[in-house]
Length: 259
Image (cartoon, rainbow, N blue to C red):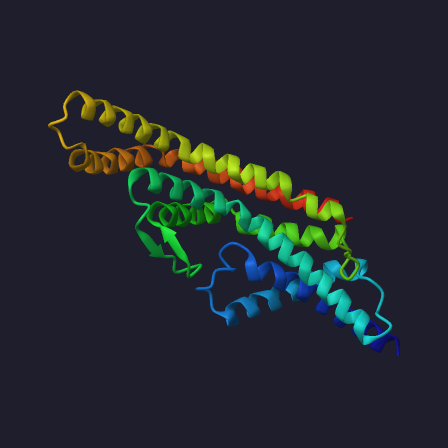
């Protein structure tokens, strides 16, 4: 009977771990992309839940007394996993936002591409910078830090014991501020150069009306904009480093606010 009780408790812990891990995998960077097959996501979530079950077992909540209590535990762990995944993915929006702002200033705002990962419309530079940021994210082992945060969450917040609180919702607000601030810092140099060009072409149009600034200005803005973005590519590595650090710090804050 003891072995049966132990087996039931292990299976219960595994289900809770699978619910939390599935929430993260469903929306996390890379794995959460729609281009990744659902079977691959499910397989990875299953293997990761199996690997983390021994870590979560000593901290798991007691066995539920009835079916609806089990459903409630699984639902809350799934919600917590989704929150972790969205938080890790949120800062990538800063890179895409910066690319969209530069595209709008440069004249590419009317050109949209279909992002194969999200299957949504994206600007040219937004898609490029997002792919570059994803590559750097992998090189900086950001995915391993995310898995480490998941493992840490099982000891900080036992499976089946998560309860949404007001502090849990407020923990994401500082990260939203960081996201918008980082987007502005990434876009400001190129947008500043393009704004100066707009002012210069405006003065030329006033001083030399014979010059058609629209014909001359659009190719010049595209050329200068691309050159500026190229020169700023090394800054992208620093920005992605801030993304990884910010995501890791945000995950820690979210976990602490859920205790």
